[in-house]
Amino acid sequence: MTARVWWRGQGLLEEVTDHFRTDSWSVSESAEEGSVGNCTLVADDADGTLGALMFGLTHVEITDDSIPGDIVVWAGHVGSLTVSRGDTVTERQLSLSMIDRNVGFGRRVLSGTASKRPAETDVERMQWLLGASEASSDFDDWTTYVSTASPVAMDACDYRGQSADQVASDCAAASGRNWWSQEMGPGPLTATLGTGILTTAWYDWDTSTAYTGTAGLTNDPTLIDLAEWWPVGQDATLTRDYSRVYSGLYMPFDGGAVYRQRAATSSAYGMRDTTAPSLNVKSAAKAAARADRILSTMGAPHLRVSVSARLPPSAVNQFRAGMRVRASLTHLTDGLDVPWWYRILSRTVSQAAAGSLYDVALEMTPLEVYVAPADLFAALLKSGTSSAGTVAYAGTGDSPPAGWSGVPKLGPVSYRESASPYSGLVIGAASVVGVMAQVTDAGVGGVPLTLSILVNSAVVASQTVAVPGGYWSITWHAEAHAIPVAAGDVVTAQFTADCSSSGTWNEFLAVWRNAPYTLAGVSLAGD
Image 1 (tube, helix red, strand yellow):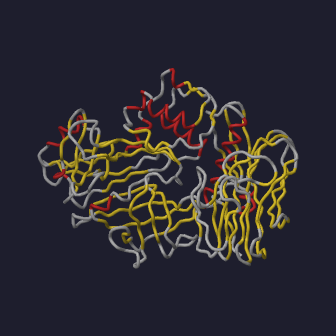
Image 2 (tube, rainbow, N blue to C red):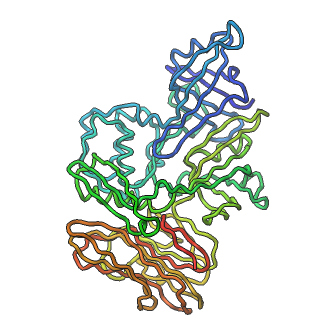
Image 3 (cartoon, rainbow, N blue to C red):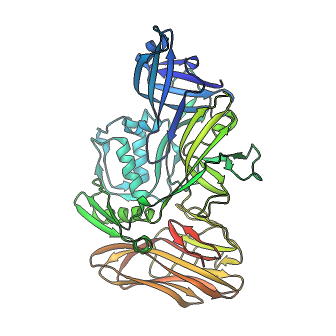
């Protein structure tokens, strides 16, 4: 058996590998919105030595000396311990209910005066939280994977009496980022507490390129090389989860409630409402912005891919929960039958009966922006504010702005400008294409809003929505199909708002040919 099991607690570090059967342990770790990975370990205590260690036990680590670099296979805490009779009249059997390092977010209740937070961004709030006295003992590294890009304004809030996981969840609800914790490098386990292995916090979008693995998984025999590409079992599945698709959201907050709708979702999937109380929010404007952001993530079915692989020790930690990894699964739909990037949401590891290999089961989600094979595709992307008129985009699919994944340009199409701001896409050869544009706008007053798609300044499609009086924020899109275009034609988008708008954000413009696409959770039907 290559795996080694360690008890750690109250200054002790002791190896107890011999008490665990090679084929009887399985451990899980999670990297999805602070959810805690749960698993059970069973140990044989023939001589009673483990029983004595249990009084001070807080932590279990599983390592493998043959894994280079980050050698921790799994680390976590004991949630509960059950003692029962073993195989003989003198033997005990210990069943340990284990929880991964995400439990650290909820271990302490915030009570200091610093927990009464001023108005600040989500990034500032998370940086304070992870360094706060109530949390700092659980996290050694809260800078490497805590993104500072595109911060979101949050209301002042008194968090006293709440736990760190509630604050992290509040920040993530405002920004759309993911959050979790894990033990990783920089070096091997040592007997000295606080050295060797670091507990690292993550606060970033799943679409980030951070924490990228060096290897991929595939069932394409032409790719498998047992180095950069490892084979997966034939049980790989794709699930389209429609249970999280909602077009309307009722959000109570501290001072009232808002109800928001997303027209693109109701048009595609019908009207369906849900609730999301956010009592740490103090203003209608912040509640509306949060509701709109949440609805943007509920605009299409959630895709999850389940795979399993039998790996040598050298490869097992190339696929940890939270990692961004490649996968090429030739039988999947939704454009995922080609190599693409995924974020691993959970991992379960067990040692194969042979003792020198690991069975690894993964739950993954494809990154937010992905495309199916095509011979022509290009996208312009934007996060930020602008005014009515021709939409100016901050980035391209090849060089996306913060919060977006890349969607590389394909075929005879180019960007109108060589640098930001971008305004249009230039068709390079005669073709028949589909186009979609999306925009979010906020303002005051009951007025019509129109989003149009133009080819050479002539409108080829438009969508008008009417908004109620008072403050509003709405996302809508326009699309056109089977549009004949010639070489040199320019595709742009513009919108009009007969009021004083407070700005737009999360716009995109995409053109494609001969394939369906999904972009930022919005389905782009093929022609």
